[in-house]
Image (cartoon, helix red, strand yellow):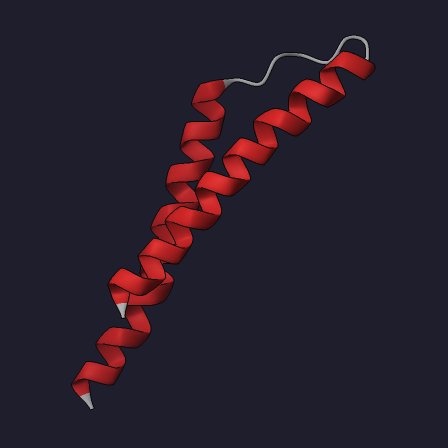
Length: 67
């Protein structure tokens, strides 16, 4: 259960990060003064979202295992 949820979260995050960089490049080409996307910010947000997704998968699995 946890593996399946984590795999789905990783897949979604990989797709989201790829789309974010592509969208940002397209927007930066059209909007003057738009700053570059900071990779460290993307890494921090991605790690936080992955941690939340694993926690959201793990907590219900723990509850189900106790009963």
